[in-house]
Length: 257
Image (cartoon, rainbow, N blue to C red; front, side, top):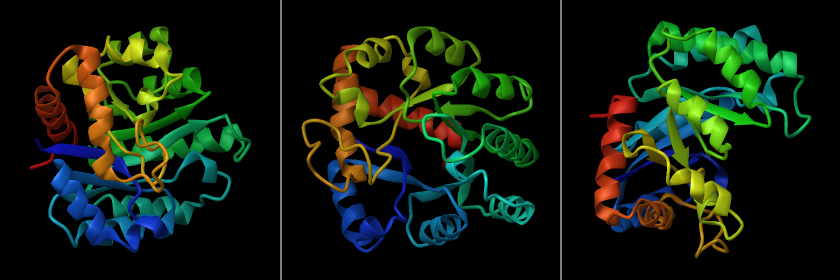
């Protein structure tokens, strides 16, 4: 089994200080590829540098919508350069988050569009963060329909109606450990409906450890095996079969070797 963790934050201090051990545990668990996502300028720089150190490790780069109030023109210029790295396979995470009042919505929309402009220019896929902002996120993405390479909605938690919108547009869906939580029956019902060729998996570590290891902190890539096992059960297939399909999806979506 060779799963790919398509969204991790391996530059967070609690993971970075033990990165060799974390990747060794990951490989032992059958998780042999990772995309580490930088969400501000220091972490973007760290993500690219870290990806340069290890085979199978690549990066996604963008400014999280929480930071939209502070993102400057110079930061966007920096991002345009950062995406040129051969180790960068995606723009983002980027999008809109209205759950917390961390950034003015108009600023979030402006920075989101700046990311999408860059994604069009570099023709790398987009990692979408959307929370309590689905309609606005989809409206902005619609402005770029036909010009983006593709989009994955990360840490998926949408409704059935929203899921139809995402799939109808040809986007991908990525699940974290939230799908394993005891109170996530509705999300599991939706996960059953996702076509296997649109499905990906992520840890979003150091956050969201899955059941039955939810108490383990920080979360790390090796633990996505529990999320994969949950998804395999929902689809009524063997874990190895699901893992092979998700790995093919991830390689195709991100252009991984």
